[in-house]
Image (tube, rainbow, N blue to C red; front, side, top):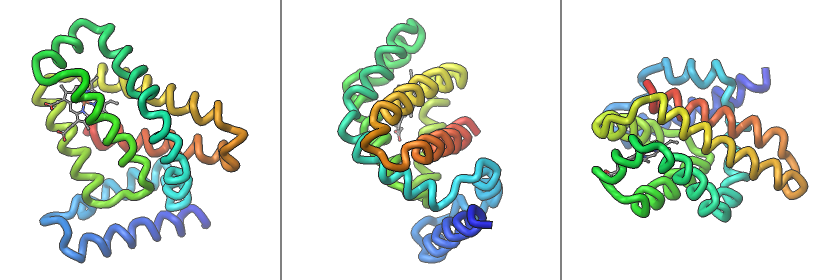
Amino acid sequence: MEGMEHFNHTTDAIHNNKSAGIERQSAWENSELQLQMRMINLTDEDMRLISLFRPVVASRIEQITASFYESILQVGKLNEIITKHTTVDRLRQTLSNHLVEMFSGQIDDAFIQKRMKIALVHQKIGLPPKWYMGSFQNLQNTLLRIANEMRNELPEHEEIIQAITKLLSFEQQLVLE
Ligand code: HEM
């Protein structure tokens, strides 16, 4: 089956990375992550499509983060968390870098470890999962709106949209675990 071949290529690449000793202990030793990818059929082909969308994310990043923080700042509790720990400007920069990186089309140990750190940071600041999920949906709405707006310039636009939703689901699965 075509999709499975792609999946296997992805995991092979990940295992090679692991055996190169890049990480002290590979997150990929936890084969549950591979099962999670398999469940949502996140393949190498999806990652190729994701990387095609990266320049769009980079060029519209201001719009994406502006909408994200506009929605967060309407919630008093979230506003308080931000003021206590950082500033909106700093967070906006963090999110911008994070999103552009997320669309690199690579899922490796560093990708997984980074999500584990985000989960830890959010836990430390006391961010409830329901607000993480809400803000995440806002992000997804903006990304899909942009992908739709650009359908004439993106030849594989339907496939790109599907790949984006899979990537975002995987990201949430990692951060909310
Ligand atoms: C930290 C992403 C939702 C508040 C971070 C970091 C990233 C990130 C990449 C840096 C983690 C690190 O230090 O390695 C995201 C994403 C979200 C999300 C992708 C949802 C789509 C939220 C929400 C809040 C929030 C809803 C609201 C309060 C913070 C704060 C920090 C943080 C205060 C710590 C900043 C610091 O101490 O420098 N987030 N975040 N995040 N996030 Fe989020």
